[in-house]
Amino acid sequence: MPYLFRQVGIFALAMSMVFSSASLAAKRTLVKVDGSSTVYPITEAVAEEFQSEASEVRITVGISGTGGGFKKFGRGEIDITDASRPIKPSEIKLCKQNDI
Image (cartoon, rainbow, N blue to C red; front, side, top):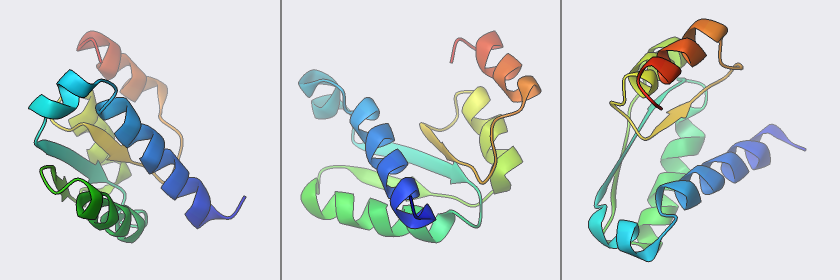
């Protein structure tokens, strides 16, 4: 599967998880995404498209790098992390420590 389509599919899956119920979607107005600079352009484009369909939702997309994104995600500071590599055991441990 081409990289772009895989990333768009992953983002769509993540967004569907963030908005998994009608009541959550009604309450959620901000979704924070951060991470890989190489994935950023794809995420930014998909976020803009998503917002065109759900104008009540604001999506911020940051670029702190894959490691920085995993750290923010593991601390519960963001909803979705972009990554250009698999998650490391130490990053999984941080998520578990914070019930993520």
